[in-house]
Image (tube, rainbow, N blue to C red; front, side):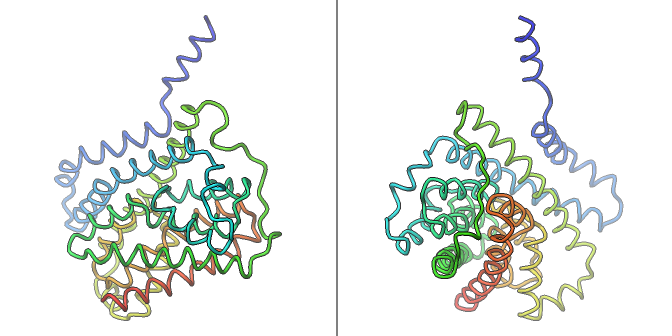
Length: 326
């Protein structure tokens, strides 16, 4: 009896997800009062941009996290070994295209890719899925269409460039990768124990991590729009090479969830569509949190080789797609 009472109290304890949800709701609710209290037009602009990015991005973030948790918990990992072609070279593009069918956010794709390798999937195919799932899934592409309503070609450009990078990196690993570069730790899979508990745990983990990075990204986008002199931004944006490199590095530093990065990219209106496309291609594949997660799941030797190569490939693919389309 006593144990059940203690368990019930624990189940009602306020957690990090609830705190994050309350903060986001309060930010939306007090948007007007905050704007009225702030007399400086620059601060008003910062508040407007910050809250606008959050309001547009949060629904896609929540839906993407829930869908990723469903896939991670309820789709058997052995399914991939049976579904993918046996030949490694053919399995790579198949795994890349599977990102459209079985999407996942960056936070979920890294451990899922590790689980696929443990279950016998060739590492090249698992890495192609790791890169494609957060970049070309329907949630991300829909969010991109909403963020760029006047530029529908941005959706196709992002999908094609991201898929090319994912498949290309998979084939490159098949050609040059070495088995001893990947060291997988012995960890329990997401389907161990209760399915409901594992689902809720996956949701809580991804919401906290992705939501936190979204807040940081929205704040950074608002700060760039307000604090950085317009002449600097225009000068940087006017140079086609510097603008691409600047937004590629910014994507790595901001570490925004792929379900929300399109809204941040759309707010950087000083930059060309090509440079913003590079931002969208690089972000879901190479950022600080992904490098840290890849180091933890696959080992340092893997991450220090795979991340820089992916970064270069994403810049090249995004730039070429932008040149062709625009």
